[in-house]
Image (cartoon, rainbow, N blue to C red):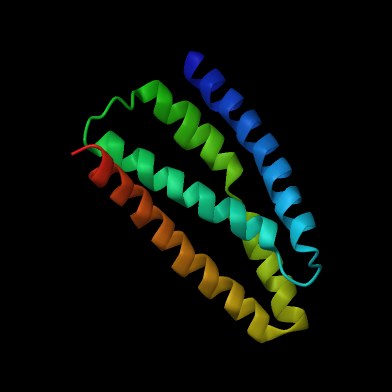
Length: 126
């Protein structure tokens, strides 16, 4: 039961942060034609997932409880793949090329953020 609570509380925190951060960035961009808020939370989430997963691989104090709370709960609800897919379909219906750009940016920056997170661990904790 404790494991479920850790994931659930992490999910609550992550979903709340997603709402706040995504909304803030989207409002800041003043764009109604491109989902900058979703892009931001996905890239930030990818970075922290890369950072924590590499720390876990190196046995750097990432316990099973931290994995449940942060990696599954918090980051699982903070990142928004399903929203990304839905928004991409909407973009493609209006302007197909904008949907493809959204996909490319998410893939390139998301993979880059995971690699950057891993690099930060390698660099700071040698």
